[in-house]
Length: 218
Image 1 (cartoon, rainbow, N blue to C red):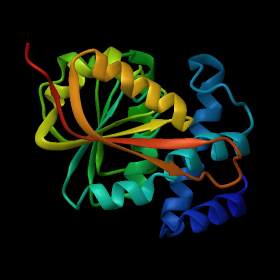
Image 2 (cartoon, rainbow, N blue to C red):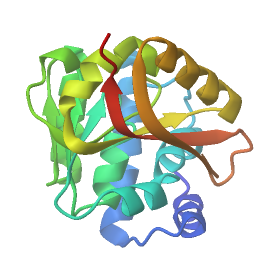
Image 3 (cartoon, rainbow, N blue to C red):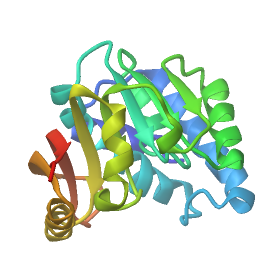
Image 4 (cartoon, rainbow, N blue to C red):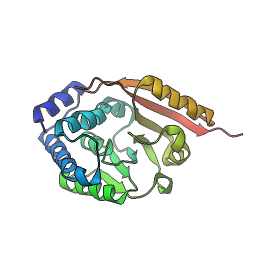
């Protein structure tokens, strides 16, 4: 991994970091490279591509999480997979706690190994389907997960009364279309769609922020 590329990317987003964070991200990418041939964690095979398309892509929402969550909050990463965004956010937001919910056992093992090897102290893995998770969270997030209208009924029970959903999406038009379907399924919510810029990536990215999310009666 190109350490200067990582440093420049974090600086462009406006994220404070130290050598410990840089070393942990380096270790994380090394673990992905080691296990990817067997576990098929990501499609990219070059460490710098993984850094840009996955690590910095997750990190680009740092200002959103800083604004919408607070120290001590518990945040769930739904269908964490290779740890995006949960591992990245737990390294960048050490004063929040993260639960990485993942049902595939080989990925559960990978995530626990990453947490152990990087020394992350504010994240844990929940090895179950999201519908089996009984805890409630101040915020939930997901990236490259199911469309919201497919999982809304399982996500809602995970949120505290004033909890917020912070979901990584692609182009704004596609996000808006997904939300339209969600409304058509009988859900109401307050939403903002925020554009985010990923350093060194030309592709469009948005964050969907959902508040006051509920299933309408009737």
